[in-house]
Amino acid sequence: MILPPLFSFRISCEKENHTMYDIAIIGAGVTGCAIARELSRYDASVCVLERGEDVCCGTSKANSAILHAGFDAAPGSLKAEFNVRGNAMMDALCEELDIPLKRNGALVVCTKEEDRPALAQLLDRGVTNGVSGLRIIERNELIRMEPSVSDDAVCALYAPGSGIVCPFEMTIAFAENACANGVSFFRDTEVLSLHRTTEAGGGYEIRTVRTGTETEHIFTAKIIVNAAGVYADRFNNQVSSRHLHITARRGEYFLLDKTAGSHVSRTIFQLPSAMGKGVLVTPTVHGNLLIGPTAGDVEDKEAVNTTQSGLSALTASCARSVKDIPLRQVITSFAGLRAHEEGGDFIVGEASDAPGFINAAGIESPGLTSAPAIAERVAAIAKDLLSLREKADFIPVRRGILRPQTLTMEERSALIRRHPEYGAIVCRCEMISEGEILDAIRRPLGARSLDAVKRRTRAGMGRCQSGFCSPRTMELLAREVPMAVTEITKSGAGSAILTGVPPKPQKDGKE
Image (cartoon, rainbow, N blue to C red; front, side, top):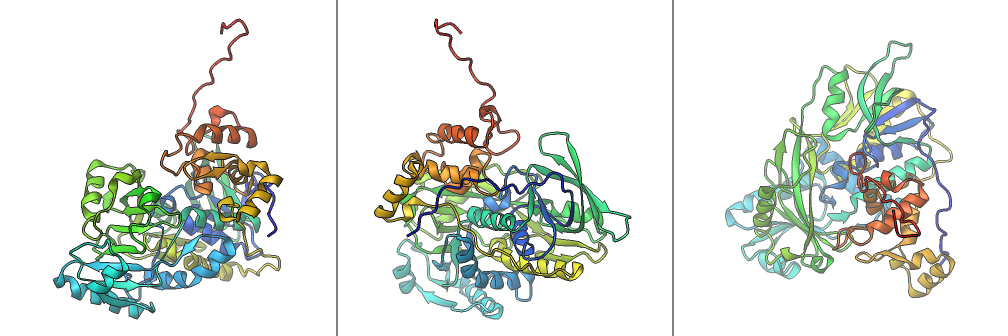
């Protein structure tokens, strides 16, 4: 095996002196980054504007990480179309971009005989949507497949094509590959407003501000792609009379330690309701157990806090489908916001009264699965509008951060001899080395915060939740970016770790 060296270079994807683009994408979640990657196939100048300090700072970092099979969405809806298409694309895509994927299958558990018709309806819906392999299994087979399923379970819908992925790695992979193919990313850049220009040829003027400052900047673009998550209605309504209304739907989760990761082997769903697919219990691709989400509409589009009532409801609900969940092994809880558009479907396409303004709005579940298919559609629209030509030098592949734990002992020893950084463990819970953290900082769109390092490497995601590894990670960030330790944040503006540095003691012991 040829072992790759540490990244010894930095690729800048932020070109501050270039503010005129063919296409500007608002939002660097999984949808926006998938669109950026798809558009990078073409000979066009493309930028991504993201108010967060990193890509994957919104809904994409706080979801169920499920590759949905496609049986839940209403036939004929965009959700159904993009879900099934996105699922079919995922194996090849994850191979190209080095994204972890496991086809572990899913079960929708029915705990009452009177609910059996609803399960049959899901089966019919899935068949209509073109989902293959679906079948209803009875209790005896269900118990053999999942011994920890609820004692009340009577039957289940089995979907072998369902799977689990890592939403952080998927979003980052899309972004890094887009960057490698020439897309410019502007992080910490909040879009304040946009409007049609009066210049010949049309286009849009985009007023932005540097997050946490009052520094404004103007971008112009021929085409806007609106992938702004829960804020997508705000930008649509600034340019189109066909107003959208997006509600932030909060979902709260428990993440359990890896000692609980084998409690179930498949994703266990409950029968869906009007508020979503219900509380699920699932393993993760990294070996943890994930429980959630709840579903509650909130007025505040920044309300990503967990609540006592929400977590209590989560505890009660998960027991309806899976028994004996070791909730003492919870290592963290978190919440994310889904962008629910009042029409109940994805909004994907050019606004009828705003030429060149393309929505990718209302992207709630199954948005993660649908992202590559949505990207295909949006790129096709942009291609037609600008008569774009494909590049001859498009780079379709991307290699992720080298994981020493995936190597044989001989390969790992050879790696450490060449690069001792891979033998220095920084995060003991997840066994993450200094070499992996250096890679995360140095690679395209490198990490600039503790959470950005965590999303790329998992340093800080273990049982101690960064209690041990954060000081060393901060030292590496300060040295490599470089930046002052007082500039290092947990997750961007307003989350500084240190507010001052203590003075060094004098030789006589006096300060």
